[in-house]
Image (cartoon, rainbow, N blue to C red; front, side, top):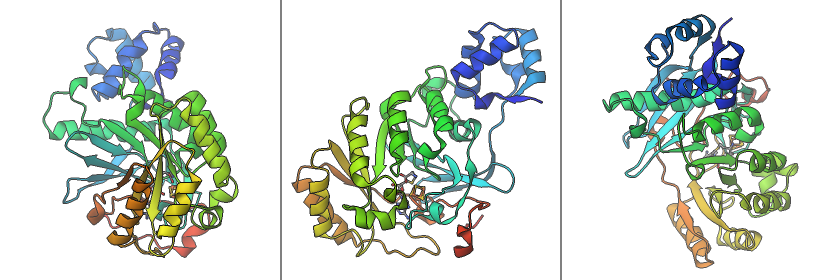
Length: 367
Ligand code: SAH
Ligand code: SF4
């Protein structure tokens, strides 16, 4: 039985080295070979002793998910469908911009939280991703993008500068594995990203928000989507368990240690549902004591969805009302929707273990 080293953070690799009779500092060298140089062949790890390399070759592997498909949208957004075995697939999206490259990473195969406007939520749930499958998405993106640009494989030219945990799944419902993957993203011997450039997006799992605050306080985005419990209960069912008042209190607690001095509230704009001026005014009252910014996301449709995108006029008016009240508000650009890579369109391949897919036929087209 071999061990997949992609499953280990710095501490795990140190323990592994000790267990096989090597000095703990070897873990740092291994981290660099694996994550900064993307090397899978132990023979090529030239600064490790030959005996150590031979031992590794018999005991360990470096195994990421397999690429099933790779699409580039007209605007340069790139989406990979990755196999994670047993017929399950997850999606990862790279969004290039002038001054940064953002990778949108998945944390679960499907999602059990069933938000009514979300493609992933409609697909049901299969399982949590392992650390190797989460960090493997960043590993694959860096490796592929670097080889495309023909750049030398050094840590000086990492193409992914920001990570957002906004792909398939609820990251805080897969807490331990996500935190280990976050540790690797932040580790100077692995990806060396700053806490400000790594964002966890959550639908509002309050106890896990508190644990994240203690364990690994990266930037936080909260999917609010409604200005009152009555409406949020319908859109984000987990609200029945952790209502808005508790959610906002958890945001306040998080802010005490957050790497940014604000929480980002995501707000999907659904035509005729949550997008009126009255909703905007109610929202302003609701969050007046929380240092925050708003990110309005025009709804992205997907096969079988029941909602319509708000008109751009409604989105602009909503934004202006928030801005006039002093809230920095951005409207998320829809990127990659021609390859179903936009927010909420990620479907992957989910062998549903819940009964939800009976209501929804998978239509992901592998072109
Ligand atoms: N589970 C986490 C992160 C993944 S979803 C969360 O819910 O926050 C990332 C963002 O996309 C969330 O704000 C989510 O509400 C939003 N989203 C989901 N479906 C969408 C859709 N169809 N159109 C636009 N945004 C959507
Ligand atoms: Fe899950 Fe987030 Fe989609 Fe809700 S919006 S179903 S929490 S992935």
